Image (cartoon, each protein chain N blue to C red):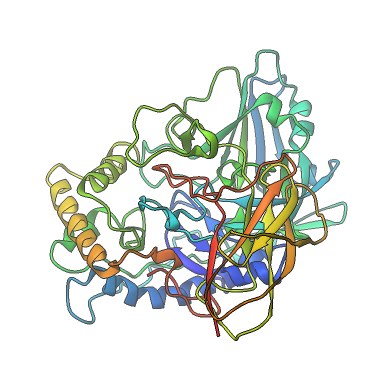
Length: 168
Length: 351
């Protein structure tokens, strides 16, 4: 394995643990123990060697040193009825949390997002899968609206005093 | 850090950090990436910065060559276009940031003007486009690239930075090189900068022509649901201020005098004054400003409010920039959740 990652990433990884609860709470589609995890994939062949990671460039009092980080593997997945189509299509490019952190959006808002992912960002979502994604997202937003009523911005919501907890 | 998203990373700086540090520590600096294919290692010996396009001669510069060039230094705030998007009402889609998608740092690097002059910008050049090493995971998706007008790119302030607060940049903040566009939103501050392309026609790429566009109105403000208005690429930041020594929702003991402090940003014009209020904006007291680190930096403010009967109180800070622009008392709104700039409220309970 590579060197320990930056403090930022370490903090991110510890925050991920907390996020698991948040996702389960937000989605609220199945019972406890809802989120699953997958093992972190092995580093690809030819990953940067320790020797390369130590290379330096020096000039006029400034030294730049080769750098590498381990980005945390995201072990959070969509849960509940209809989640298969979400996990098959959405998490290839981004975390489930990007979706579950969204406020309650209308069906039209979600359709615009799905259309953007397909049309602009070239997500390989088939015509067969698109309706299931929209159904899941709409159901999630109904749940979010119910949980957040009366409205209070999630991002300004509960945080520990040191500000290290995440999201809703 | 507050984790907004693991992949691609979105990390938000907690407000408590801004109370302790006028210059945001590198390992507490907010992180935002568009695409998940981010190089997780950078070999400084192999890295090249390419300058090409409508120039006299294309360049492929090593980091050693950049370190040998004349340097410039500047303090500047890097703020996400969507900072505070999570506070928009009605809510909008996108990264649900509170106020921590920003940071202030001392940047050292080479002036972009120096680099462009080295390559020789040819007559007829219109814009300069910037791209980094990150790439989309999916073929055909638009690679992230942003452009500035040639005159802006050559204004002597835009720089290619290799030091952030005296150290090399963290990889997630763009190591080894980041474009610094003082006074402008972070979308232009391209990370892992590897390509500078001089164009002789307008950039019609997705990230300029379709994304990061705002209503062409003061404060980018439109009514929710409005249609048919003209949009322009997001550009200059506006004045903002935040009370950082008292958290929103805090319960405070009954007291006659209350110290209120925080940070202010003049947008692209420096901080002229900051006023504070303990009665929801009915009366204002001018705060004392801290050291001036330049017109693009955060500036500390501190003041004392007196006469606090027990009960719920709304604390506020209002920044006026050196361009004479004061923060609005009412929130602006647009569907992208960009450019929030209103006076923020810190609700407290006294006694």
